[in-house]
Amino acid sequence: MKNYKSFNQWMGEQGFNALRHANCCRIAYEGGQESMKIRIDEVQESNLNLEGECVQLQNRIDTALALIDTSSYAEMQRRLPDFMDQLKEALRGDHE
Image (cartoon, rainbow, N blue to C red; front, side, top):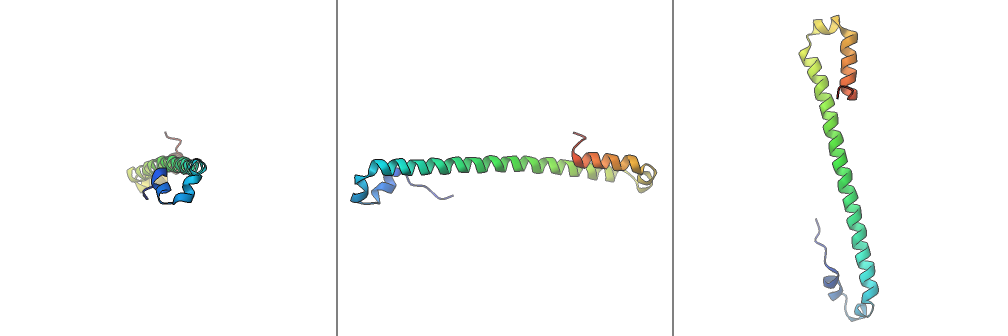
């Protein structure tokens, strides 16, 4: 991640003319920094939500695969409607 400069570091690089308008510059600079921090926080929160959804989806898939793995082909044919309902429930997350 890029290192951000403090206002004083940035202002020191701008020269004398910028120092005349330091208060306005400080307000604008700090507002921009706060705006970016809020956006970063939103993106990080969104990322956490997506990670949680991925875990839930993987759990559904694992449950469905476990149903398939624990059933023999003959057993699946014999009780196909029930087996398909269980599989649908697992994939939808209804078993949780």
